[in-house]
Length: 193
Image (cartoon, rainbow, N blue to C red; front, side, top):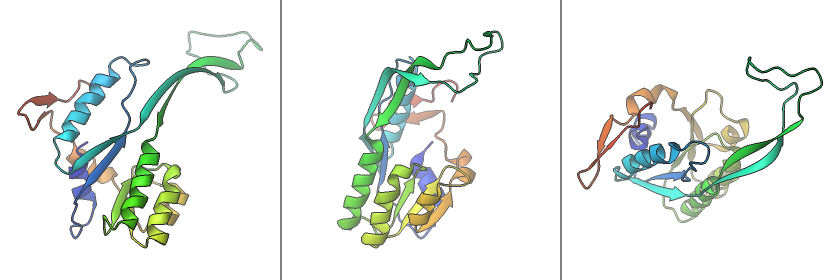
């Protein structure tokens, strides 16, 4: 997804886009060994966009015990006798940490330093309700919620100045199969994307 093209397509023509902040964490290859290379290709493509700044949180991968849904659903080739299903399993838990905090802190800071006249936030993460509320209600600046889902979280919608759905713009806003970087090198879209 070319997020600069998406922002230009989804926001009104009257908006002048001056900066785009992208919040993420570098993924671990522990569960999927090909994931870091695919993400790296995407991040290199994003870095080719002059308005985009990438901000990193952390990606944690850990093993932990977790409760199972009952009755557990197994692949059709596996069956357990009645009463033999486990209640917990040792699983890989992956979690992105810090990206939403970074976005929220930057939004509030930028609102109070007047770094923008209007912000747009692409999320359905309710952890961002309070930063958006502070920007809109305390700093008095409009924040448009760009939503990736048909029905955004009610709490996010309640604190946002406007709501715009990105779904209609996704197809036309993808990167081409190859992106030319600033140094003249090319980065190719990973197979299967």
